Image 1 (cartoon, rainbow, N blue to C red):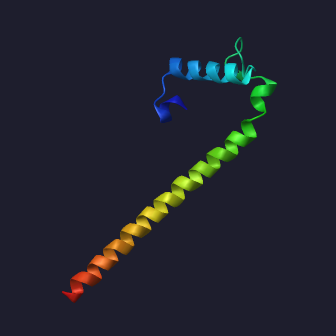
Image 2 (cartoon, one colour; image 1 turned 135 degrees about the vertical axis):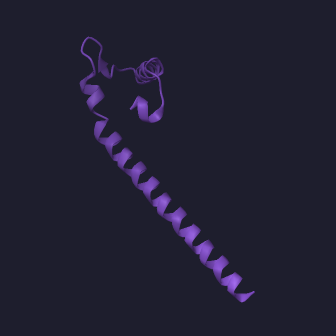
Image 3 (cartoon, rainbow, N blue to C red; image 1 turned 90 degrees about the horizontal axis):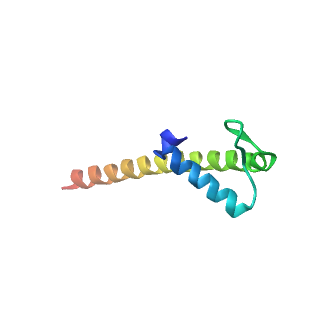
Length: 83
């Protein structure tokens, strides 16, 4: 995760602690590397769905951008042919 989003480990740890504080729950068991508490598992299904939706949005946005470029090019080509 931190590599894809260019977030340092200390920053990530700090943000997780902030989230835990704001929620009033522990998301991770600190003695075991990366193990979630039961409260930490609860939002996982929602997060996975949000990641899929974000991926779909990004993919559709790319398709839309390519379509707009193609349409723009077509309009330019038609305009050049008329001149």
